Amino acid sequence: MNKTAKAFSIVTGFSILTRAIGFLFKIWMSRKLGAEIVGAYHIAQSVIFMLFTLTAGAPTVLSRKVAEAIAKGDTKRGNSLACASVIIGLVTALLLVVLFVALKDRLNLIFSNPDCIPIFLILLPTLVTSTIYASLRSWFWGRKNFIAFSSTELVDEVTKLILSVVFAGGFIATLSPSNGIALAVTISDCLCCIILAALFFANGGRLAKPQGFKELLTSMIPLSATRVLSSIAVSLIALLIPKLLTATGLTTAQATAEYGRVAGMALPLIMAPVTLIFSLSIVLIPDVAGLKAQSKIEELKGKLSTVTLFALLVAAMFFALYFPLGEQLGILLFKDSEAGRYVSYCSAMLFPIALAQATTPMLNSLGKERATLASTIAGGVVMLPIVFFLTKVVGTYAMALASGTCFLIMAIVNAIILHREIGGFADVKKCAVLVALTIPLAATGYFCNRLLRPIAGDVVSLVVTTVYTFFFAFLLVNAFGIVDVVGVLRLMRPAKISSKPYGRRRRVSNRQNRRKISRANQKT
Image (cartoon, one colour):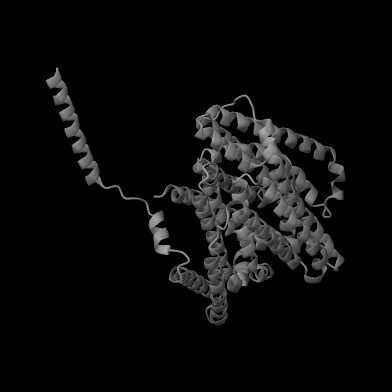
């Protein structure tokens, strides 16, 4: 199997399992606890994520630095950089934890719903454990140890799901469901950090004298600023939308539930396919950095073209699936038809999301961290006004409009900067044909589902429409020469090991050895 294909298979396999279990967690939470608790949890978690961007540094930077050190055979430098990254993040995390514990009586200034405050305080220790976890995971990424890189996330999700069922499922009477979930997340995060630290030492990692603080900070600051701005925007939206909804006449509980449907149910389902794009980006980032260093521009263009086309292919296939089946997925997964309609109406978001998620890591791997910061700022400038002015008009759909517009602007800015850096890299004709084919595919899937659903029911019509969509999607992309499906399948197939050539080589080798020994004896 091709090395890139093998690494992609490993990362994708673990990512799909991890996201599937994470999705089961969201399904269980929405069914068991209801939209209001889901909303309160996600509001508190969004603030934790915003703080985490201040402590975690930039994983792409550390992984790239570690990869460069390993390529030069300097293992000690890789360990030193990892230790420096841990120290930078750990100091910041501890300061933030102390600050928010000291101000715990004033957190009502941040959270309009008081139920969010205890959840936030229970989640606060994850700042420390997640910071250590992020640096160690980046060390594995730089060494291309994708099994350790991906498997720990899977362990985290499994542990979180099991502990949530125990803590929030009514087995412990003294814990409220929302606090039980927060405690489960905190414990699972701590356990995952311990496991990753053990793997770090088992795979040659050592506590070395930290070095490279300046070069890490120089590269990390633009990326950290990018992540901070993104998280601030998400946190502001999480805090702003419930307040804007209450201004329309909803109670605080109703507004929190509406936000919970979007953030805890619909958006995770819409964002699920991005896992595939992220997996390919993870695998190709070290390769792109190496090709740029060696000035192999044509090969670099080929890598970027592959990522772009793959991202659009994923977006097209899932748009064609979500558009006709969104409502049914919402009912079957969450028992919430409104969340399902949100998925259906907002499925077109997948195209700008996919392009932004594909191009941003590529810019970072080329050392263009300031460019990603510029694209994030450009997207954020448009995002917040849309939420502020349109929430009172279209409700939570303003969040989809704002997110889609933000990602579209990011994708456009990223593409312009990449074009200036390396020249044209995307096959525009193939991309345009792919998007054009997706529209009739989604429309026919919609009418197919509308005809079958009253007769066969939700499950049968969903299965039939899904099979129809994927079958004709693969047929069309292969027929129009967009993707060589057969070639991709051959690439992913493990290489067969034949015993005959091996045996022949072995016999030839033995004959050559005997001849060498005979000649040596004659000389003697």
